[in-house]
Image (cartoon, protein in one colour):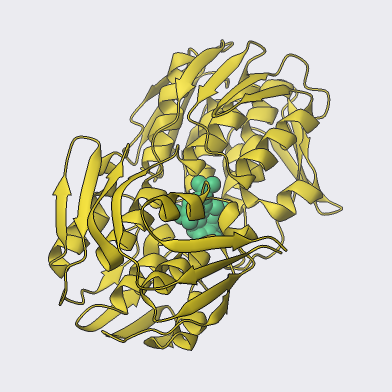
Length: 418
Ligand code: UD1
């Protein structure tokens, strides 16, 4: 298993470019299943989850050709409308094919996700939503089977709680349903908006994406399209925090600052030095910056996917901060690892109290999930001495060549293949 070896204390300068958003690219690939015509997607990040999704599409019978950051997908004949256990167990977002496959083929079979490191994460809301659109859903042998032989029916679906991939799954199901679907209490994330923009280019009729109510007029068929994925706001946010910890005029480029509002507001409240341009943010280490409480929330709130990285930042802030995780249970697995590096953190259920600033010291630490690993890399950048971050396959799921991007800006980080 690969490791990162990181020598703390280096200053980050210059530019770090942001890749396309993993969480927008995943539903975009699934959406390509909705048409038999070719779909060309640009700015696809070269990360493991996207390779997994491409293989899943191939499994269903689609062809997927890769050329750098561009993918060409053609779903002419979908012979196997299913997501097998082997795929779902490595990537929960595999359930994103459920909606498009039922809409396109009248049936789909998707393995039930098992437990995962950051909580139980069921997909009951996807299932309830599809049932709402008239699908018959059964569960056998660890699989969910959905059937709508006569096609799906547009209806009103109210989500019991806000779900990002659930909203995307239902949106993709509804575009080919008969009549009007209204999704209430929908997720408002930029990734949902990007998917709606792509589907609209394919001929779908969608209003209200980016608000809690999305209305979809079903159409008979969709056509092919070409679409460029939005920048990855979580990757951008991770590098911004790296800059706040160790940067000197470090520019995070090719991002959309409007998608980073919640983080930029917090960093400004901390007293961190930021300069926002049209598609970049420049950040510098700001000695003596203040600790500020943070609570994760659905968009436009503070993203849970930046909670672990924010906590790494708070270990260096002056004062005490309360970090509250409201989206996922059990998403504090980075805490014991940060503590091994010298951080002062106490947790109580979904809350963590961080006392800073603490001089961290390099240690051998273990990645437990994608974003937790990113927080360990950030902590290692400011720790005294050498850190070894184990199991970086977690980070490879969602960050494109993170060690190369950081090293190009001056970080002393290398990958040891194992
Ligand atoms: C997506 C993102 C993930 C991010 C999360 C929250 C992708 C591929 N992944 O995950 O990076 O951390 O949004 O912003 O876009 N829930 C249920 N039943 C369901 C669905 C969800 O109870 O059917 C619960 C979950 O357990 C969780 C909460 O709802 O507690 C929100 O989850 P959800 O928004 O669905 O997360 P994902 O879409 O899986």
